[in-house]
Length: 495
Image (cartoon, rainbow, N blue to C red):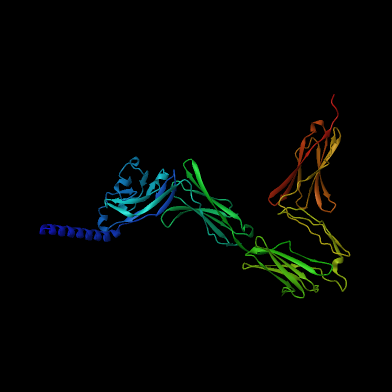
């Protein structure tokens, strides 16, 4: 190799070394070039998407940014330019608008008429800085939306005002989604526009309500609906409410005494978290498996506890039985009334009460319980239930056939458990007859209302349906039920 050749190679190597040093030096300076945009955005085909975007450049180039244009590329290759702000709208592969001013280092862009084929990573290039930023945004164009997010998912406390937020992305600000709750729980709903940490937009529906033990384990659904062209794309999320509530002792709790004078008491309570039960006699805690008696506990479904106390010894005259149900939210108590001995050798099972065995009434209304008692040889415990959400159908009598031309009376009768708010009885057709309303007393001394329809039967009434409707006023609403009778008229032969 000649000296000239060696020198030539040396100069070439030095030139290459200097170029590498220059590139390294530029790389250090280029650290000032940086774009700020979301790493990933999900949008829907046929809709639009807003890409929030800003950038910084070297200070020495800021004065040379006028005029400026923005370019979006799917790689660092100039052949992969899909948008150039200097081109007309239809001249770009990507149907987009550059909303931000590049001279202000704002590259925010909105893309219209998205297609699934637009699911790519996009790089921004600023001109005249002539720099393609290393940061990119990955666009995912889907046919269906993700489920919204409901927060918080933790348990809530009964009686404390609580807010649930249902949030969904709003990739297209011109067509924001709608959020709908399946139940507002007698609360209020506020819609908010929020900005995520990455600069993208979202919509949040905040439901504020006061939790009740009735809401425990209740499923509530939030549905997000996106308008896309002439159709709506939707998704939903379900959250199960967990309400922390103090125990409640059920009306099923009771005490009874058998012929051996042993007393059995049952205390049924429900709370969240599940409660524990404690028994007390005359204020003193009763331990299990003592000479006086025993206690057994069983856990039922839905945070319900059943505790059974069996006392083998009779109570003193001033002793009372009390059930306490506790959890970390609070304590409930119930005192049982047990008849005590009047005098030695004679127990109170000589008392007897006279009352209806069963009464049906409506929740929200009232009920009258007729009751008398006498002293008998034994005690009879009468049980009754007094809460219904809907009334029974009235009774129409008689249901037998009637004779044409003969005056006929039909009676429609319904219980009147609340005498201050008696029900109304309405016939669908009076058949050109008259109606009389009567207050009646049943055999068990409960009250009822009867509407007596008197009319003259005709062959035209044969197989005609007639309806009697009972209407109970309960607060501000009316609860009703109806009975239908098909008339059968025995009529003369027509020659």
